[in-house]
Length: 343
Image (cartoon, rainbow, N blue to C red):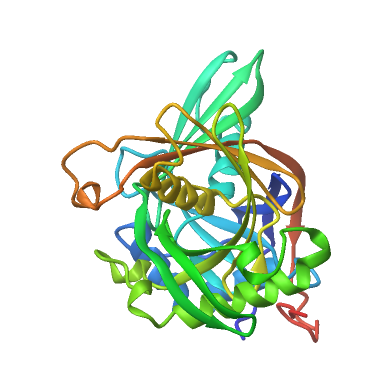
């Protein structure tokens, strides 16, 4: 295990209940010409991964911790780049993190903003370029609209054999690949009382599909793999559009406390493709803890190859993030638990 000799300074937020830890100082250098290349480097570096472990694992973090390293953007078209991480490695996308990064960039002054109005914060992430549109009123951030990469359906009604019987999953891409399963088909509802059962079956579905052809990204193998399972309750329709509640089980059994930003983008693409979500409608998307995102779909621009995939849309997800603290973490050379542990 690499020893960490420098303090690591972070600023922490939560977005709709889901934590997000931004590293300000103490991260190792991460080489690469693009953010996507830097993610591959980070995944294969013991030195870089040691810092991730330090910040994610107990006693400094917990099993469901999330955060990022700030890196250079791919080019001058973005304000900065980001490598997202969690307790199992480095992810390709993170919508709740993008919302938190937008708030941080404006509140810290990294991106200049007028006290009234909307400021775009453009960020390069491993899955592409995203934008956090940060709204302020009298100098106070009130909301963020996360504009995601082009998202689309991948497969419909895929049979999955599970310990709770055969179910069908719709698979979509929203910066990462997700399998979506209605909770009622599992004999469950998305409530905190069912947390353990939802976690277990979500993890099972993810790994069952992860080696299937449905887990292969059509253009970039670095984005392949089923990142998570979205288990949802359909709560009908409001005057504005569909209302659903979900729990997203991502990575290896991590549970998103928020409605999941990239997961919401995936649901938007699937619902728009089915005709359930019209261009003038909004998806009201609740989490297992009762927090909420509002999602919409707009048409894609012509030109890019991914825009030609059937059902492609540009999802936007509205939410808000709040600062929870600032920290300076160290690793004592004599500490027997080193970079920590996961229970």
